[in-house]
Image 1 (cartoon, rainbow, N blue to C red):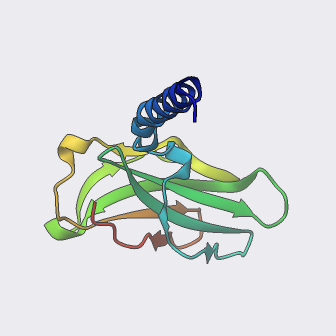
Image 2 (image 1 turned 180 degrees about the vertical axis):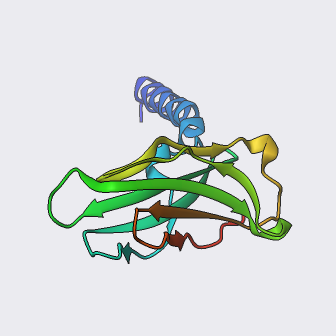
Amino acid sequence: MSVGSLSHVLSCSFVGAAALFIAAPAALADPPEWEVPKSCSGTLGTSDDSADFKSCIYAYEGALKAFGNLTTKNGASTVENCTMVVTIIDKSASDEVVASSDPMPCFNGSYPSPPLTVDKDKVKPGHGYVSFVELTRPGHDPARINSPELKP
């Protein structure tokens, strides 16, 4: 191998290694929020079977986030005379409510948007957290479903 060929191979190797070193830190970054795994309940139907809903909780950048998801069965964009509230509780602190959304209409989709958030400085290490969605309609008992427990 000539000296010129050797220097070309070595310079290519160093450039390639430098590119890998520069790109490596980006691979360690947190994934985008929409790609973070969510811990969701199964679905529960409304008492009149007009919609299914579920509750989800997840951790992102140290904060807890929760949302409810409602899917109407008749293609409507909302369930009439229905309100939904999303709440996060600390199971390790006697079901203490740590965050709760304002009541919102039962729209088809995921709400609240953005998700209900508990800042990372309020999340206690080792504690178990659960979110729940509660639907309220006149003339019907409230319907509630809990997410699985999450220990961030």
